[in-house]
Length: 211
Image (cartoon, rainbow, N blue to C red; front, side, top):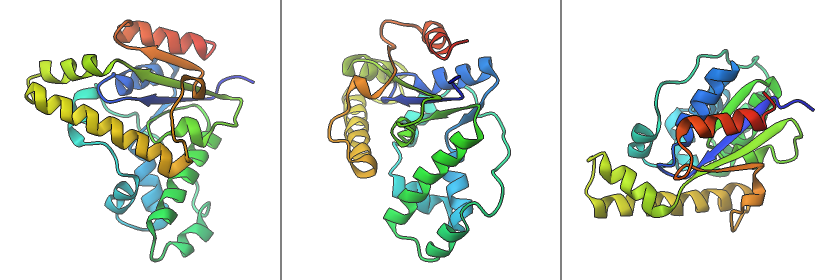
């Protein structure tokens, strides 16, 4: 079955958002990241901050450093898809909001032609044959050096930020998908951005997607 959706997971400061954005641009697919939060909030009729807190997203600093360029605009899904869920979320619990995030990922995938960055979408869509699951990562020391080199923080603080992000990432996988230990075999493609520059990584993903 042709690849319709590409999921980009990434560790902090590995460049995953940049790779995902460029892949989406080259293939003419929707780039979806924070759209997941917005769509989930719209369906639940709650403040997006509630959904974001339920997901425990990584610090804003990582997102400023890691992303190059903005998301591609796309139309929201049809109304009524989450009617039952919306009723159940009149007073949303954290677990209900997490379930809504997972369901939103599935809906985006159902629409097809998307590059979904973060939100552990590779796990939410693990049973689908038309999905390419990609992990963009790099050694801890390399990611710390990248953050410190941008002179946004001191080296020691950079270590703390990256370590905390990695810890939160693992906790996220445990909370949402009961994954106690992430493995390369959870993905179809693993890119080490210490060895491959962004353009090389983009070409690897595009090639794996069959284009």
